[in-house]
Length: 542
Image (cartoon, rainbow, N blue to C red; front, side, top):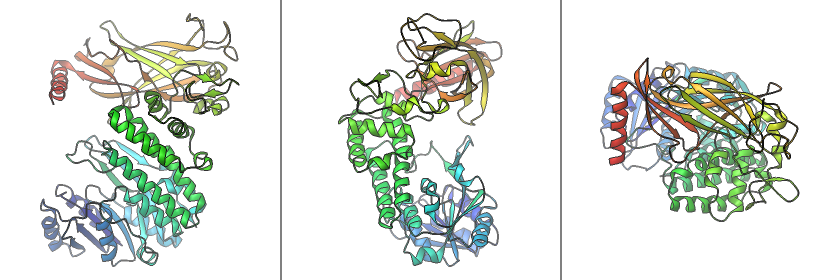
């Protein structure tokens, strides 16, 4: 096995990457470290490591390539082992990764073996698994078309490749500066029809350093060129699969774009300026216009709705609502318009965007909308929730109660869960006695909202950033998990200092995330509160 490690100006991390590859044991015949003309001493550091480690070879590029594809191609050319895999200089291979992949490839005679990648936030250590459903159990895929979901795993680093397979099919990365080169390389691999082995083992740790001086390409999404590059790479991947006759895989690539790329960037539109939004909308409309109805149909409903709204309007519109539909889980906030024939539609302005699927979609998958407002007070903090009706579906399902779960942003663990009954609100705004309601909205009939006031013991949470997650429970036992829309306006998201028997004082800052969800920052004690205030002041000054 050859492990190709690529790096540029990453002397702080490249040695750890190389050591993690060498630590895989004798299964790794060689580590090929390709330095892309670094100016920070990375290449010299690698040369010093190579003097004590005969399995390490260093390839020094004379000219910086500007991207990740060219140095990886250099590694493919330099590899001498029957199998090859790739490792970025700021990531690591966990113990046993190579044995798991190599063993599966040999057992099943596979040209490609793939395993689970985890995204590890640094420095918090929080881990998120990448495409976990693909790697729930060991499996063999005789041909990628048998498992179109493989298209959704666009990473090249959580996979082992037979070196001869890559060379015989001329499979290489795009050269030079080409963001999202994995999309194109992965499409070329799938188009060649390899036999693939999948393992449930964690084989790659992807370090996400959001505080780094230079963000990675996948995280640096602030400029419109990033979106243009993503569309370009996605389009090339589709063309490669279609040209190879892999229509099912090509269509899955379209669905991937709608469900992942489109939703991710749509959620962030509120963070961008007007010029970016206009360019984004124009680029996206132009690309989506190349899709046909069959391309959109396999995509999950939220991404499909976003795509339809973009296609239906020449100029950016309803951005806040689009952002919330694009959220995970999706939310669809009022107004709930209908066409003349009663069909649910996006809005009176865009009646061509129909939402009839909401009439029969399972309740646990509906884009329920809950407004949330946190009121920190000295005598006790209240969380006010309001669940909106949705074309009669909520009334028929009869909401009963809601669990409000505060989840630690850094670690993904629940710090506090509180439960409250939901009180039905009549169409005239008056409350009714319980959660059950009649079968559909009508004059003086079914409620148009359900409300709850939930006391929250903030002292139990302590310092940190907390996301609010909801579990809405219905009469038949169905549960819909969701997030809550942060109610904004004068005095709504106000910073407060409240007394705490446990911490002395708490600095409480409710805020809206990029998708409009309610979240919460807490600092404990006078010193912690002062530190948060100083940090806020510094951000304002800069």
